[in-house]
Structure formats: C-alpha cells, structure tokens
Length: 200
Image (spheres, helix red, strand yellow):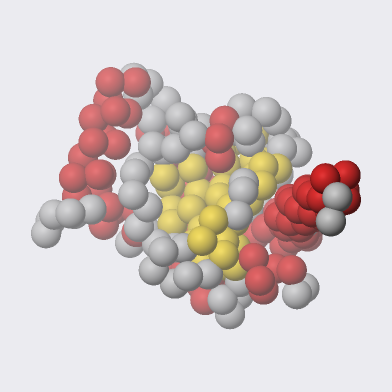
C-alpha cells in the first residue's frame, strides 16, 4: 500500500467520523422542537389553571419587598433542610395546593414528566412535584431565559442522563402569564423523559 493510498484511507476515516459526530449532534437537538411543541400544546394549558395563577400572585405579593440577602438566606435554609430531619420551609411548599396539583399532573403523564416546579417573579419556588435541591432559581437559565424574556418565552435545556435511573432527560421551561392581565408573573420548569418525548 502506497503512502498516498494510506493518506486517502485515513482521510476517508476522518470524514466518516466527522459525519457521525455531526449526525449525533443533530440528533441530540431533535428534542428541542418536540419539547417546545409539548410546552405550547400541554404545559401552557396547565399553567393557566387558577390554582397556579393564584398561588404565584399570592407569593409575589408576599415577597414584593424581599431583598437579595433574604432570598440568599432562604435558599441556604432550603439547602440545609434537604439533609435535615425538620423541613419547615420545604414542607410549606411541597404540602401546598399547587404542589398537589403538580404532583397529579406528573402522575397522570405516566412517566413522561419526571419533575415539575413553578417559580415566582423572583425565581423562588412556589410549588413542585418533587423536592428541588435549591429554593431560588433566579440565578439559573430556566428562570432568566423565560420570566426575564417575556410572555412567549420557552427554553429547552440540553439532554442529561439521570444517574439514578440511567434515563435521558431534558428540562423545558416557560413563562407563566396571568390570563387576566397578559403579564408574566412567574415561570415553570418541567423535566421530560426524552425517549418518551421522541416517541410522541
């Protein structure tokens, strides 16, 4: 085999590898339009329910004058409670009517929804189906790319593999709008099982 032949074979192998990488990258993004369509068709309707709107508006009023140092303190308390026996802050959120509503939506999805949590106008949890690792989401893309953007904002995150279940999941987030005023009052994030999503 001549050196030129070897170079041609090597070049062909590199071209095939690059093509595979491009194809895999494209497939990895296939979940974005699917997740976006699901959010527009299903999640938007869920978020228009009075139990969602009323809970967010009530917490926005309660937290209207909440300064960043108090937000940080609450977030620190939440993180500590995730590992503690007594969980007053977590229990106050996970035990409220909005959380009960979100838990039912997750259960009714038959595995498609892996988690769902709603945030107020500061990025603090209002209700959730499962306990999150932190209380404040205001410093994360799920809140910054929805609530801070506008009423029609939808953000779909990358696909991750859950270490405990070994399943591939993504998160789709969107702004929550008050139907009466048309104003953005909060945001929601939903974890989705990617395999189930792609089969829809």
